Image (cartoon, rainbow, N blue to C red; front, side, top):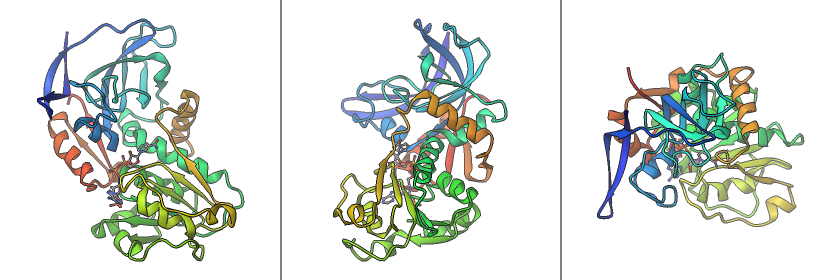
Length: 327
Ligand SMILES: NC(=O)c1ccc[n+]([C@@H]2O[C@H](COP(=O)([O-])OP(=O)(O)OC[C@H]3O[C@@H](n4cnc5c(N)ncnc54)[C@H](OP(=O)(O)O)[C@@H]3O)[C@@H](O)[C@H]2O)c1
């Protein structure tokens, strides 16, 4: 049997993608086969789709770090054919073919049963971006001594950023959204941002060793000079959840925010987090953290994926892109 996939090939060192028909393999022991109904676009997918060997070592390859669908061949005692499931992260979409194909074979221990009050479309509107946002919010909540100042969220219009804005706002905290997109003010206000800070203005003056506290905590999805700038602006005992690097991998700081204010710089690695942790986050999104993401998603088919990948690599995406397989 054949299945259709967004398929990336390396030819003479150049990478190109096509919609290809691939041969479906039987799942190995301990693996399940999933008929994927929806996937989503994350920054890491764009890196894999454009030949970044730090993400995907060998090509040809089918990216897609997120998938939601139905068990087609359980081949494992934990699942039954027809179960509705979600997979995010681990090696899927990195070196294990991912959700940009209509079928995936993945280890059963990577799979979460989809909560019944969350549709596959809703689950993929959340995807890895949402799991990362939720993990970041939980890190911030660990500090009981943080002030009432706003929470700063960088890359605020992006996937992780926009879901973080919504979650923090839903939890009743004031949100300062840092963005590079002047045209996204209405969008950011509509998802819960209270103040909007333009990245150019924010970065106009260089980071200082210490500054007057402006924010209680932060979710930083971009790294680099943005992270360097926010570290001395966090009030005592605040937390910065550090989860991204689109602005750079180097951070310039001193020890002062840590030894004078007790700031915590908390790392987030949602892809490799234990399946029990992911399951608990999916249950939260299905219940007390239920979000209406319909105004911030765009649903596309495989044929339109390339332009969305180009846009995310340029830093131009707003909200989330969901990939739908079939009609
Ligand atoms: N640690 C983890 O577990 C984990 C999981 C998922 C993703 N991530 C990482 O989180 C980051 C965001 O992922 P995503 O899927 O949300 O990507 P995304 O949708 O492209 O969002 C990134 C946002 O960052 C801002 N941005 C882009 N280029 C920038 C630059 N040069 N300087 C400063 N800001 C810039 C843009 O928002 P504005 O225009 O609003 O500023 C952009 O929309 C990526 O680095 C990704 O690898 C980490």
